[in-house]
Length: 280
Ligand SMILES: C[S@@+](CC[C@H](N)C(=O)[O-])C[C@H]1O[C@@H](n2cnc3c(N)ncnc32)[C@H](O)[C@@H]1O
Image 1: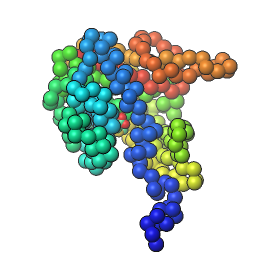
Image 2: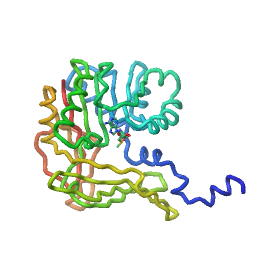
Image 3: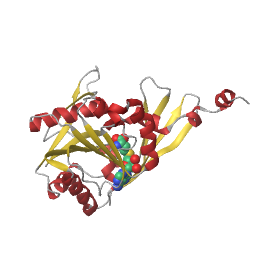
């Protein structure tokens, strides 16, 4: 049978690439790069040029970082060689030699990498939640601080809200795509904050890719994270929260604007993502 006929018999979930689905569902590199640069400028007064992405996965963010300015350099660190290889083939190589010559990909543990010193380091999509004890997480923050210049800054995204400590399965349509992203929190233990969760994808033909990604986390809270960052030697921490606006007749409905600003007090929400900056 011709290859095209075989493919047409395959269901959409079998033909899909889980890394493509992931990047389209949960990554927004342009927004995060803009936030990192603007916040760094606000706090330091100049633009950061070098970035280490810890837990970099497919290296989409650092590829965009280097594409955004001809002087920017980046290092991506991840334990999983297969994911790094996918990122090299699908993100770095298409960006061309001029961009990739400024990117270093390392298959290493984030606890082990501190060279070269960078202006910024980031750990996104909540990956630090894989460290389960205060000692482990403090050790990561110490390693991250030691890998930064004396004017450097680490940024983390942080997930929380009343719903983050619950069993939920939440579907979200992905703009202009023929699949649905499903975030599934299978279990949460209030005794140790163990949170087991998965990403599934559902397709227009009824097929599903179950457990495309699974996470075994300790759900850290903002006060714990800020305390540990200071214990690890950072001089200050800054929480940036998304601004909301009333775009609907329904009084209770507030929509995120995509703009973040520094805050020290907010109303809790069912579910929120904030950015936590730690200054060396
Ligand atoms: C949720 S993905 C994050 C991908 C990307 N940073 C993002 O924002 O979507 C987590 C990644 O962290 C990597 N990882 C987990 N523990 C690690 C460690 N100790 N050192 C380096 N990479 C690690 C995994 O291999 C995986 O690719």
